[in-house]
Length: 116
Image (cartoon, rainbow, N blue to C red; front, side):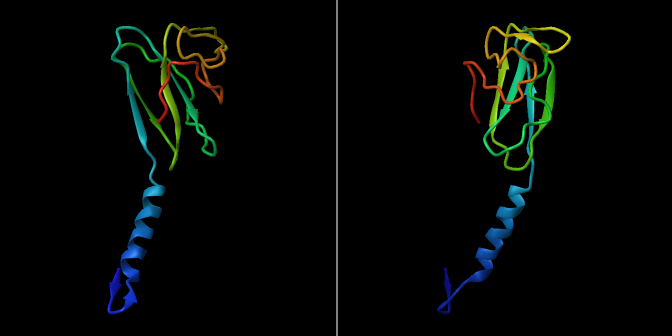
């Protein structure tokens, strides 16, 4: 963009400030279980981003949970089904299992899963 033969700095500076602000805003994912059975959401951070506050939890039918992400988080959130875990969080899921643990902690998801 030119103004009187000189580069217009103000719009570029404005875009830079907006970009920095947007990069600092976190996102809250609301996960709601509309299924008639219990699910166990799992999360996995992408390369270079920290894990979310929880990487696996139980969500009964009709319940919802909020999971807050860090700025510029990337990764996966998926529903696991048919899970059974012991008191130590060790077990297995019929779908979406992540290494036989309630907390995924960096273990990938067995399909099916969605990537965001």
